[in-house]
Structures are given as C-alpha cells and as structure tokens.
Image (cartoon, rainbow, N blue to C red; front, side):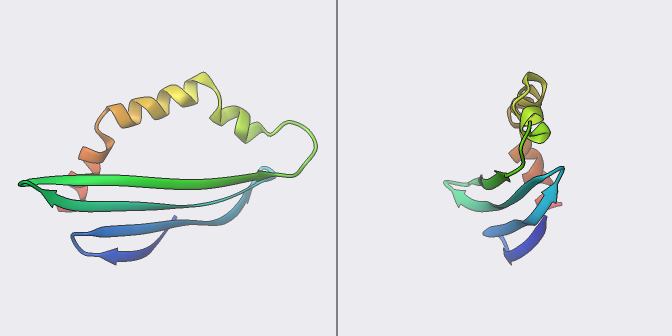
Length: 92
C-alpha cells in the first residue's frame, strides 16, 4: 500500500500497486476523507479492489476471502469502530 496524495485535514489517497500472489493478480485503491459537519468529524472510507485469476484450478486466495472465518473477521473489524480508531490515530 502506497500513499499517493495527502490533503491535510481533508483527504488521504492510497493505492495498492499491482501485485501477484499465489497466482492471483490484484490491485486497488482507497480514499479516506475527513469533514467537519455540525461540530462533529465525519470520516469516510472508500475501498476498491480488483482480482484477476487466470490459472486453471482452484483459487486458494479467493476461497480464503469467501470463508466464514474471514467474513466474520472483516465484519468484526468494521463493527468494532475501525474508523473511530483510524480517526484517533490520525489526530495523534
């Protein structure tokens, strides 16, 4: 993950450079924005990722991403105030 652009107190743009792992090609981007609205800080996160699998046979990484344990972990991460923790880190 590389930081592409920082606009202080407004936006952070990130990019996941093209990569190949276990036969799967992937790349992506993320944007974190911060805006004050009625005295509160609103943090938003947008993520985009592309996966390309061109080999014959099972894609192990996709199988892992679609597993119940992986999905549960992702859900837990966002329900446990991921953006609040990110905001605190950014403000420290």
